[in-house]
Length: 138
Image (tube, rainbow, N blue to C red; front, top):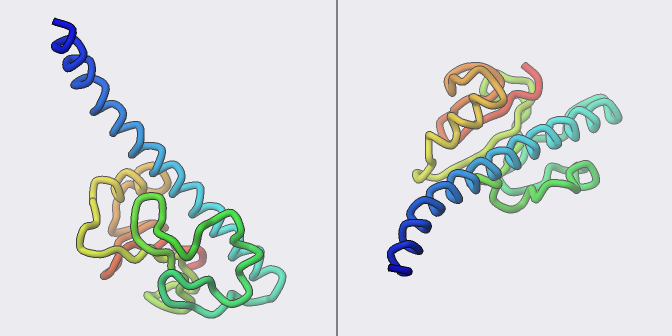
């Protein structure tokens, strides 16, 4: 009887814990995007231009002091590697998240719903060929 009750409680609690973990990862990712966007804007204000773009997982030249609160060289809270694009994909500047084939669209849609227009094909946060991008400046 005790084992059955414990099993029932686990069946109720585990899905809730998984949803809460995913929600906290999405919130952390959104916070990191906001911090990174502000950091790139601060750099631009101080240097009159954005830093040059880089490959995924590489801190853009001169940005290390600005990105101290973000683990730029590691995976984001919800997967993928950070990247920085200048003058690419039709935008003046954007923060990229480069993901492999295992991207969980429902998580990325939740990010877009919470921080943008809810459509991964438009707005500031959108899908691109090898991941996603957050437009810092159009």
